[in-house]
Amino acid sequence: MPTVKGSYESVVIFSTTLGEDGIVAIKEKFKTLIEQNSENCESDEWGKRRLAYPINDETDGFYVLYKFDSAPDFPAELDRVCKITEGVLRSLIIRNDK
Image (cartoon, rainbow, N blue to C red; front, side):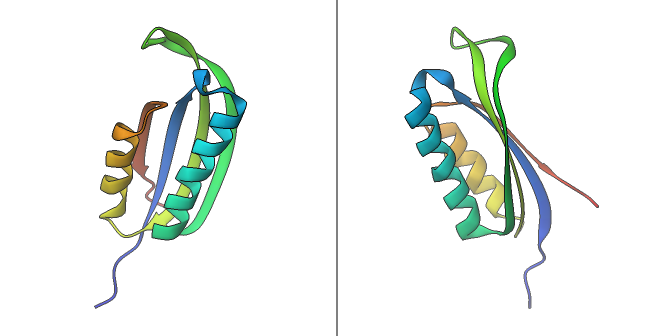
């Protein structure tokens, strides 16, 4: 039985304390993880923006939007990885019903 794919979007806010090289490395880490577990992966960098409220005493974050199609179990794994990865301030994953 084929696995039903869903369309998802994830916004991840990375800490600016990682520096430019650290942000590039962590962006690629997440893009690679998503590409390995999904199809049609796209990433859109929103760049450095001011946070609505301080998170861990930080007032700025680097925003990246990922769009992908995957099986329903992958977003839970992506959320788990976001929560345990040093340098991720916040993340949000939503199902995009077309």
